[in-house]
Image (cartoon, rainbow, N blue to C red; front, side, top):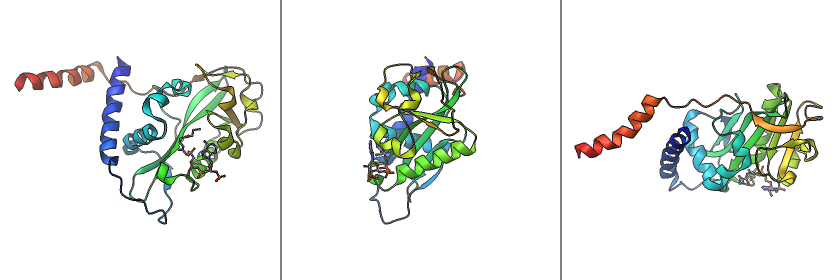
Length: 222
Ligand SMILES: CC(C)(COP(=O)(O)OP(=O)(O)OC[C@H]1O[C@@H](n2cnc3c(N)ncnc32)[C@H](O)[C@@H]1OP(=O)(O)O)[C@@H](O)C(=O)NCCC(=O)NCCS
């Protein structure tokens, strides 16, 4: 039930973002580089639309790493958005609290996406460097992710650090990577990676009933 409501809310958000994004203005590539900042509530609908564009909605929600994110809040101070000169969200990167086997706090990074018009200009790198530096500054010890090793290797992510870890679903070992921010933070890590972040607030029962009854009431009065 919670899931269905979350899906409806998501669909509405994406719908409005897609309407706004339907006819994007031409980009001036010579203009200022997109600015990276902490994600704001107002970015969320455009972020969802960007992720749908980058990965496809069904495909991205089917990912095993999504099982570690659904229903959770991203880690405090570690959700970033890049805005183009016109204010649109053109890049997104979030990190999430997990445990890498029992009692071993870590972060899960992802998804990372850059709008196709802004790719190959260093924005993905700038977002990765910003996120890694900030995670280090906040005292986190390690980051995990599932992604293309040739891309993430440039930031120090390695395959060997996750040998003793499993994700809660199907995954490709070659794409399951780790980075130690503190030396030895993943040494001997063994077990299931599980989510530990705060839960997203669920809507109250009265809210759900109110949402359901509005269309019915409108129908009756029509
Ligand atoms: C991956 C992504 C975030 C990179 O963003 P970006 O802003 O284009 O990246 P940068 O400009 O910092 O880096 C570009 C470099 O990364 C390389 N690169 C981009 N995607 C890559 C990939 N999937 N695998 C290996 N290398 C990749 C480019 O070839 C380029 O290489 P160069 O520096 O040798 O020329 C962006 O392509 C994207 O959003 N892709 C779709 C979503 C996605 O795949 N997300 C990552 C999940 S693994």
